[in-house]
Length: 190
Length: 274
Image (cartoon, rainbow over all chains, first blue to last red; front, top):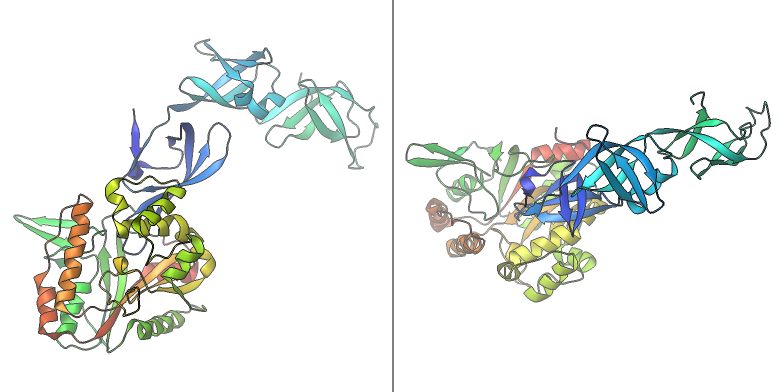
């Protein structure tokens, strides 16, 4: 079991708190008056992204979390498990729907994803920043209306609905920013 | 008021249980970089020099952070015939003079604890304090549960300190006697310590005492400090007998305060030291 003492704390360090893996996002020293020193840290839960604050007595140790981030290619899903592949070793890993999370809205296959692995199990998946996806259903386009600024819903091939400008037609390829879930432009890519 | 300059390299380490010196080795001898000029200045005050101040570097061996430098600049001064209340006015005038435009409040340790921890820091039992700490999710061992100074510090860090930014500039006063350091005790029912800290936007800037001048009382403080260290598994410090001898020669009643100048500059600039 690897442990880190508070003096080894730095941003990005992966530690275990109450059985969950966390990443340190802030490390402050608190040393009141004539008293002992404490480390007040903010940590992000790597499974759900929630940030919590924790205070430790300086010199205390905390267990390291065996966490790494790797690029894996998304292959397919069978609705309960999502399958990814290491493109150098061709090893396959499966992730639960919960750990794929919002990335599932944008993945159709082949994408290289940033996957967080904890004790050899994927716990979080980040889709590429931009996805190119086909519109499978939307109201007929208002050709030429590129200026009115109105929007309408469009269903994408992954089953996700996004707001798009009125001129978008079924069958168009759209570029979507996966970090915000917003339409960016039409895409010429295939 | 006279400006003085006292040695940076000292024969004795600090007696404060939670502060560590950088140690300089010279053959068989050890010398200590001062963590404050307190002992030297008190010896001068006891010699009859009158009101004095010193500005100079001090060193603390601890983990660094934006508000904890291993070397920083301390301004420390002593006023004969002053008590802590009068000295706080002195500190206000200095901060005003440096360009601070603050409304200085006075807040007692008890007010902060009642508000943010829900306990009286003077009269709550050790087990009440321990239970409150457990509610913050901290685990204590059996030794820590009887270490009242530590229990109060834990609750201060967990419950009080995160709320201090909202208080602006204020003097924290009437410390529990366990946190007296070298301040006199009041004759109120809690024997609270005549110590203050100036806290500005959550940052401690100054610490002052109505000074202990009775050599027996001072010796008792040193003994308590070393007992604290032993209880925490640390080596006890050798006592600076010259300090006690100076008080024995007759120390005038006085109050003293130390200000971290980089921190004062920082809160005045609302910036980080570096």
